[in-house]
Amino acid sequence: MFSHIYFIDGLLIDTGHSRMRKQIVAKTQNLGIEQIFITHHHEDHSGNIQVLRENFQCDIFASTLCCSIMKSPPKLSFVQYLLWGNRESQNDLLPKDDYIETNHFRFKIIPIPGHASDMVALYEENRQWLFSADLYVNSYIGYFLKDESIATQINSIKSILELEFKALLCSHNPQLINGKQKLRDKLSFLENFFSQVSILSEKGCSVDEIFKRLKLKEYHIIKFLSNGNLSKTNMIKSVIRDLKNQKPTFVN
Image (cartoon, rainbow, N blue to C red; front, side, top):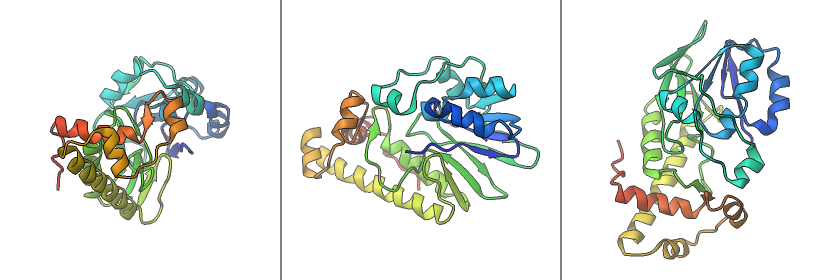
């Protein structure tokens, strides 16, 4: 899976993963980076903070929550380390929770938790650009991290769909046209999945029974190499956990 970073008007959005460090350093060396913003703590977004800070001697911003998490980031599973590489802890990120500005643009910082508790989007209202981090990725989701929340993702997507945007600048799968419809498609998938699992769970079905009844297919290699941290089973568990935590109060 590709992991995109974006540069606009002196601002670099995210730093990519450390497995691509040489390429990222080479591609950014002549960009004139003046500041960096990290959308969330995951290793494919924060993997090159240190080297880019050293190269450009610039301020690096993130949400207050992201700054806190990055002081002692969670341990990675084997498959995450294999694909993306590790990232260093960071004690010098600067918290910013409202706007980040460049010489010509002003980006609103919008919390979009669900995939990660600290994840935010950057929205340039005048140009209708939405840098959406991992909110979209695809209209169909094949697996979840253990700590992801479907209900929270649904609410985040619904809040973002209230905005006017032309370009959906996803970190893994940018949609330059029809971005809003693509995001609606993902919303529909998540809502349908949530509904199906909820009905079966309320009937007393176990996680395994729900998996079989929905005729789902597990990515066994990914599940094994991640020690269960990445799996389709986690999607079912997320719904059940959200129901227990009374999270499915979706905004309209």
